[in-house]
Length: 258
Image 1 (cartoon, helix red, strand yellow):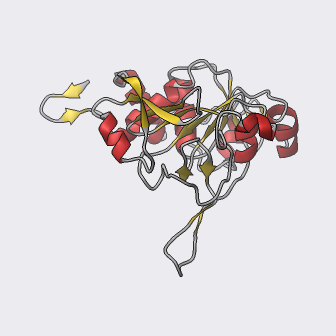
Image 2 (tube, one colour):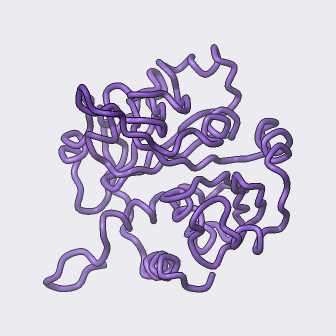
């Protein structure tokens, strides 16, 4: 889908968001983080998975916002939800017993084993650390959801060899880390960026490039990663966004009706 003489009819962010929404095609319930995860989850409900139940940390279950919420406390979530429960009930009854299929999280930093930092980033010596929003419910989401999807832009500042702070455990130091720590969920199964998709290798749990988006190359992804990124033997190219997906995404960002 291109416009003659003008290049692709989508942006790198739109490729990321559309593919993140597609990753939710088979899910029943999704615990949604604010920001890019919320964009992807709400797009999935409009395209790949109309029956998807969106769960937000504030206690909104089955939220159907007509626009992207500004925060987990946005009244639009409560107004459109099937139910609103207390935060302790949400975590103790719904999340921790494994009743949520997918957790969708963002990250400021991500390492090769998909561990997440949303707490702080170290700066130059003598300068204060860059403080971030913090953990919120992300550690519990990463621990207890059936699986976790992560979405972030693909840069060497974001995909780093070592985190400045471990906020949420992905695969720890390798494939048996979650078992040793007693974490019941499968952990991150895919990381969707604006260049492609990374998935943990079965033998090492190290993130491996399995897909690139149209117009991107494995060499670009490797150059934008802070460690020596491995690639699958045959790296696939994700399908181009459809006109319907792009229209739904742009309407969502513009505050259009669901």
